[in-house]
Image (cartoon, each protein chain N blue to C red):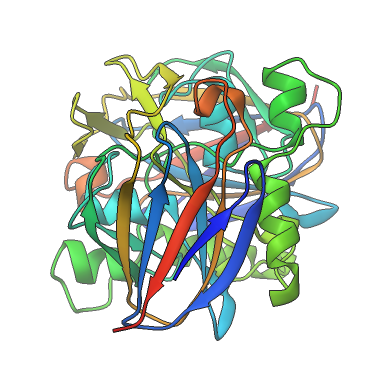
Amino acid sequence: MIEEIAPQTGAAFTLKKGERLRVIDPQGMQVSDMVLFNEHDIREKISSGKTLDFEESILISTGNHLWSNRSRKMVKILEDTNGRNDFLLAPCSPETFQIMYDNPEYHPSCFENLYTNLKPFNIFPDDIPTAFNIFMNVQFDSNGKLSVLPPMSQPNDFVLFEAQMDLIVGLTACSAEDSNGGTFKPIQYEIIIN
Amino acid sequence: MIEEIAPQTGAAFTLKKGERLRVIDPQGMQVSDMVLFNEHDIREKISSGKTLDFEESILISTGNHLWSNRSRKMVKILEDTNGRNDFLLAPCSPETFQIMYDNPEYHPSCFENLYTNLKPFNIFPDDIPTAFNIFMNVQFDSNGKLSVLPPMSQPNDFVLFEAQMDLIVGLTACSAEDSNGGTFKPIQYEIIIN
């Protein structure tokens, strides 16, 4: 069954070892921030530093694993129809909009949507790590300069993950204008048990 | 006064707001992993995702700040005589040597040297974030492929940081062969109060 995450919101759920998670961009050009925790010990969580180190790549796609801070595999990427994801940048937060967008007003953010949805799992704001930013199009030049461009994802592009341990998953439909070409769209996901 | 961190060991100490920390590579071609915590609330810590986001660069050097998971500036880099540091890769850990070096024997690591030295501050292994890897020469190509090359630092190259809040600092003389051209050397540091 395909679930929908409304624009600028999030979701959290468990995913057991061996189950697969398909994250879908139904309209194209939208980003979904994902964080992962060991369901049985939330101090073990997704780590960008461990993943980039073990996978020896900034760009993470089909065949790569996402690793935990305890150097264990959390998910394997089985399929990625778009092929561009980011694991460099932190989830957009209230401060992202205040500092980078010069917008002092309230603005929904992936950070808020992650911690509010993860609260029932006893996961709090300080526990949120750098997210795996599915479909996010962060370009870098040879001098390391980073720029956030609109996603290249087409309608119904997806990334398919397979859990390597029992997981708590936090997932968003991104709230940041720069990440998705200035529009806000839903994200869909499907848990595949067999 | 200049303190020395022996090869393959670490240190931890406080650094008050406004104080400066000079991290020196006395012999050249050595790496020092640094982690930072808010002295008054250790749940606030250095964040690679926040730093790369706010500084809009993979490469972090003079003029850049290192940011916390709460989107606050922790240190400013006042001077960097070498100019190459890494903020992508996690500190080397026992698993680094088992998985990447195919070495099942005990091997000292920055991860162990960080958490053992930070234990008196009630900081434990799961609390250690991706470190700022001073002098570390991680190259990336346009496809995102990462390679760890020997540091370009010359004897007595240094990076000078200014604390933007009261900090706990963890610092190592790196234990990984790949990071320092196959040799193990000391790191020096100096806290400058005035």
